[in-house]
Every structure is written in structure tokens, then in C-alpha cells.
Length: 494
Image 1: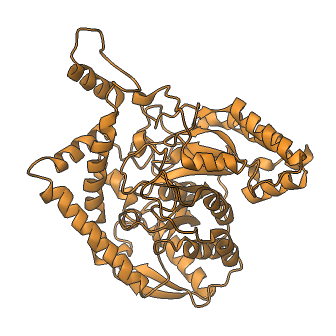
Image 2: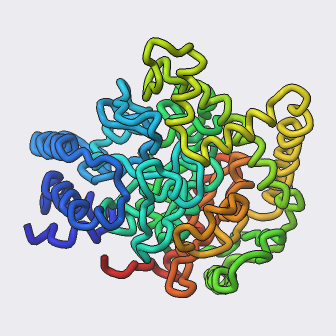
Image 3: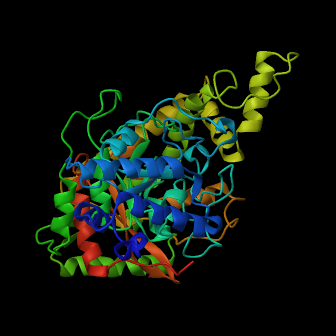
């Protein structure tokens, strides 16, 4: 058992090596992580549901298959946490909303099926902003998740639970979803790595929809290599998703390992002029500029790039995403599944539906449904939603033009470090600014990754790398090179 005494602090690649060599069993590794969850999650609240029985059964199955000499995937036996917006057969999936409380899906999402096929062990479902609408995980119907770096601060959102589970060493890998930055922003403020793949590069089948043209499932980890290994497992064409891209997945693992050698000779990095720091904390910009200098020392060339329409990304996003949300969330009506309120035999269907949605949805979800419904209403569609889609086209053109000049674009991931609970909930606009630097990529559809690049006031700062569509390997190469130069960052002991 000595081989796994510190297994919760190991990378996924190291854990996979231990299991593959027979130095540790998958059951031992899983038990260690479940014990860690028991020890610290009361303070962190990263998980909404821990599937102890299912995790141990999956781990035992891996050990049996390995004992028989079967060929297993590179991450077989490695534990993983899954964001609660991804359906898991027989395991509660609530999207952190009261309206889905207790719901157990009858099927797995495609990415969950691929995790199971790879022999990975699902520990449970992680906390999030309700229906992925938020930037701090304060909008979960089941209470916020705390940032392991400072339990009085937010872990980012909407996927704060997945990021916090990594930073608290409760899991070596996690699944998140990114609609406007919900993988990258939590990664930045928790000192972990979060990648948004190319839209359509990972399947949305089985993902509870927020904004269908933006939602992208993706990998989260503590190192770039681990993130790439998980990316390779979950990515690829899925005929059940009409937006899935029927192309081979770039070799992101090889790219990460190439980047780890620390050689970026000939790589052109575009610094986005519009993200020059206005509104950003000085400590964040200082860490970003130090990281840029580190990349130059590795041979990278820096080019200043102007993307003039990026400044309109935030308002465009907050018309497009709520509009799609108002349509997607219409299915939660108390009739087909989920919570039903007021059905006493004396009320009409409309009354029951209204009472159910009023009781089941939280304030941020209601806010976005109202905004989206208004933007799509007769007489306002062209003025709001239609105009926002035109802006989206202009932002896409900015990206296309930029990638004619450079290999990737770089910026801070967030304008500020993790903020204290309650400091922004009274002003939605200030909360929305958390995603200022991440939203343009979602509107474009390309891949982006956040990697830790330093500390400001003792809290992590994220460095964002954006690449062209289906060039996910480029961002992994640069991210791994940066990680090799600046190292990783460890939170204080809980």
C-alpha cells in the first residue's frame, strides 16, 4: 500500500503508470480518492453526489480485466469527476437545479460512455452554477463550492465544482463544459488547467443544453499532459450529435509532450490588443507579461494583433446565450419529468407549469430566460438576436484574420483573481465581466485553454491560449511549454 500513500497528489499519468505496472490496484487508487473526498469535501463542497459503490465496482472491473491480461486504455483505472450537467445512467443528474432534483437519467452522455469504455472510474457529479449559468458557482441550488486556495472565495463558474475537486486533490481529472468560459475561468482561479475543445470536437449528446451553438464539453486536470490525455479519450465524431465534426482528432497528447521540451522556435504568438489590460487587476497583467517573456525565451515570436470586434463579444453573448437558453429550458415544465409543483387537481396546466418553473428555477436562470424570451419576441428579434449574430460573424472574421498572421492568440484568462463570495452577486454585469476574455472563442468556435501562469496576492492567475478551429494541438504545445517554464502551483493544505 506504500505505493499509493500519496496517490491523490499524483498526476493522472503517474497514477495510470502505477496501475499499469501493478504497483497499485485501481481499487486502491479509487479508495484513496474517495477517502480524500470524505476528509475534505465538507469544507470544499465540490461534489453534489459521490457514487462510492459505482466507483469501486468500476475500479474492481478494471483490476479483473488487467488480471486477465486484457489490453486497456492509457487512463484505465484513473478516477474522474464529472460536472453535473452531463447525463450519467442511474446516477443523479440535476444541473445543480431544484427542478431536476433526484432525476436519474436512463442513458449515458457520449463522453461518459467513452470514459467508461476507457476504463476510467467516475467518482461522482460535481457542483456548478444552475444550468451552467454563472461565473462563480454561487448560483447552485445546493449551495456554493469553496475555492481550495481560500475557502472564502469563489472557485469560478459555472464548473467550479470540477475545478475545485482538482485543486483539493479529490480527483486527478474532471469533465467540465464551456459555454462562455465555464471550463477555463474556474481553471484560472483555482490554479488548474482547463481546455475548451473546438466546438463539435467533443459530443454534446447527453449534455443538458444551455446554449446549443456554444456549449462544449471538455477536459480539466492539474497538468497540461493530463488534460491532453483526457481530451484524447472524450473527443471524436459522434453521429448522435448533428454538430459533431467528422474529422480525426488532432494528436493533442503528442503536441503536449512536444511543448514540454520547452522549444517554441518559430511559433508566433498573437497578443490581443483589445485585451491589453483595461479593467484587469495589475497583478493579473504582471503575471501575464512575465509569462509572455518566458515564452519569448523559449523561442516564440510575439506579434500584437488587433481584433476590433472583441469588445462587442460580451453584449453579443448575453443576447445569444439567453435566447437559446429560453428555448432549451422550455422543456422543464413540470409535465414530462423533474419536479412538479401545485398539481392538486384544482389547477390548470398553465398554473402548474408556472408554479413549477417559479419554484424550480433560481434567480440567474429566471433572469436569462426573461432576457432571452424578450430578445426573441416579435418585433425585437432582428434588433437584438439578429444583430448579435451579425456581431458573431464579425468576431469570427477577426479570428480568421488573426490566424493568418499568428499560430495562436494569447491573453489573460480572467481580468481578476478569485473574488470573495457575495462581492458581485448584487451586480450581474460585474459578474459577467469574469468571462470578458473567454467569450470571444465560444462565439468563434475554436479551441482555447487556460494554464496557471503565476500568483497575484497569493491567488492563481490563468494564461489563455486560443487556436484556430480543429487546431487544438497548437494550444496544447504552447500551454505545455509555458508550464515547463513556470511550473505548477500548489494551494495551501486544507
